[in-house]
Image: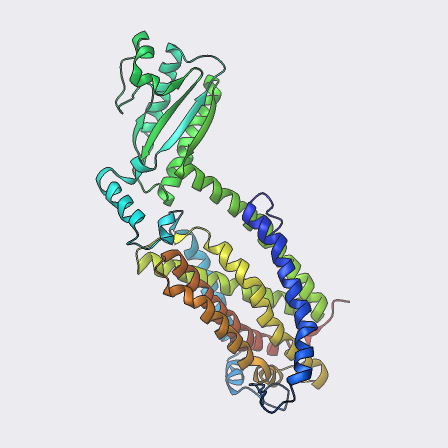
Length: 419
């Protein structure tokens, strides 16, 4: 996350989260063993997982049945992943902060009351500011009216107000116009602006698409007429934030995180195939859960998905999901290399040893994240559902559904060292 230095939230998380992880790891290696050494042998102390904490010959019957199906279950998982990739572009996302407030909160009620009478576009207009090296004159007004007409013709624009149309309708351009107090509200020496009302919800994707066209038309006009153009407003701020965060996350943060995890996992377990499989399980499971959340809220609750849900899901689940994979992979590797059981029986034995532990840990995490669904905030409900589904899907695919059958097919080749 620290690679997204330009975005303050990424910068803060990227700096402080490694410190939290380092402190937790240090405690796990020092404090926890010391406490266990003191109380672990006490009669009142219960391990809670006696019977499948070691090898003991325990074989998961469920894992064996799944392994007998061969590539069927992994193929279904891949097919669902492909469908999710196809559905993702159609999911409606929104920057509307109302998603994080209860629908009956006073601010939302008042905003909806205003919007129902005059429209959201009037409450959250878009502005095009034009700056010139010299004072605004009569010829400038004619050029500005040309821009106003061009913007008005864009699909999704409801009305345009400015120095040549202070009430929304164009006025006759003459020298008297520069003395009209209604016109002068839009002019300050060498600067003027347009106030644009959009037809769509200013925080929806349709408004963002309209804004991009407004920005393109305005900047082209500015280059042709010698103006500096600045496009602002709630929609513009949301679009710029979306563009910045998504470019940083998808082009820099996530690729580096995936590459780093593959390298570290390869070094620790000595297997590139196991590393790629583990990362793929985490990434695809998180993506499926996120798309599932978007589809449910779009189609069942008629609500847009919060725009930064991918960043929340991947950031939260990459680390947790790799932990689940490491528990299973470590045991599967040990069974294969130390006991020579690399096929179906060996992977089922690894599942029998740690499968319920992984699922149990996932249930704890799912309960914590799922509690967000009790909130009256739609945004928090979406985060809770997506993280809950991700935790359960990653744990089940890592210890039962995907990793065991694939490792049983690969056999000892899964743990073959690169050199």
